[in-house]
Image (cartoon, rainbow, N blue to C red; front, side, top):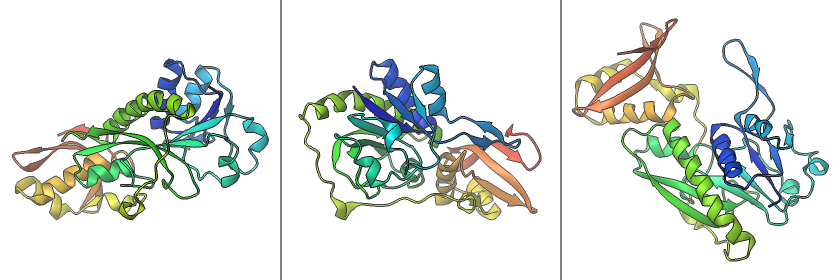
Length: 275
């Protein structure tokens, strides 16, 4: 297969690694440029780049895709898994069989940037993966296939990334050959049922101190709500509370006797600790 792979973070890393190990390596990987990370702002390659270099796959890291036509070559199609940039129409049109998007929800539910976190925040018991053909609107294109995945009560954003990425690779192995052979007819989404997600900001992770105390001491909806926040919004943008104007990060928790039980926190200026 002659295809390009677009992807950047951990989710893309897992999908790319599995595709390579399964005998379906891309001819090109397109990922974001290296970025400063951590307190020391060390310039760090994205996870997908590390995989590409380890397997000696040609790599592009453009800041913008607008002048990429000549560098991409002539792949038949592309797979996009959590790339992080808008793909312009002129790039989509480079691929005769289109760009197959790997999306972390059962479309048309949860279009947009944060489908996995939103499912956790909403207390959903099922999520999944949809493979669709990219068009000019966000997660709007025709669907090729989908696969559901149950959400357990202790799943976190991190654990669901792992599960859904592995599910994505398995679904790609089944779907791509069938699509290229013309045995899958892309089907329109029911756009009237579409829901949309948003990017979460730091303020979305704030838990009022009084609400936290109530969740720890009393049975009720606040315990479940804060537990879902902790599982959904860590590590980014993070969940925290303010006590006497000092920030305390709420890193891990569980529900115990219908109350919230914090199990890992990090007080401002100190190392994370089990509680």
